[in-house]
Amino acid sequence: AIAFEIFVGIRRHYWEHVIAAMEAESTVPATAEASVRAAFDFQNRFADEYFFMLDTSAAPWLLKHPTGLKELNDAFVSRAMGWAAPYFMKGELPALSIHTFGALIFGLPQWIARETRAGHSVPDIEVVTEELSALMRKMFTVDKQ
Image (cartoon, rainbow, N blue to C red):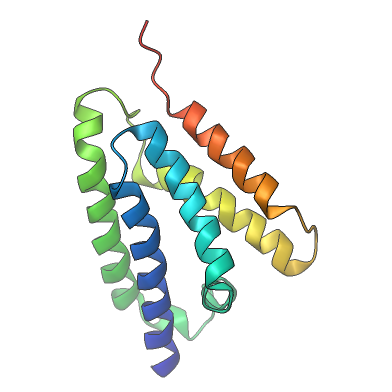
């Protein structure tokens, strides 16, 4: 129960950090870029927290708390969808499921972190951050033709 509360606190800190970066932007491309940058920033600034969250995300003791995890995730998914809704309505954000959008924005930095943590590869994080940020900006830029 104590480890679960620690995990939830870290996860909440992570989501607050990334979603605050999303909400600070006024365009979808800028938001996509800011989200990736925020995910890498959190990994860098709060490495111990981030890797605890990453390393324990599928731990058997954590999976014994499905309701608490669902409530936490639902709150942040709802907040992210609240941000996304006006952009969907204006046609500035593709009609992607929240899971697909999340995988693009948050999954790529997480994959890099897992590879680095496991020692499979140790990329230049500054280069990867710049590349993925530029990719997200380009991917979510609407062609006005």
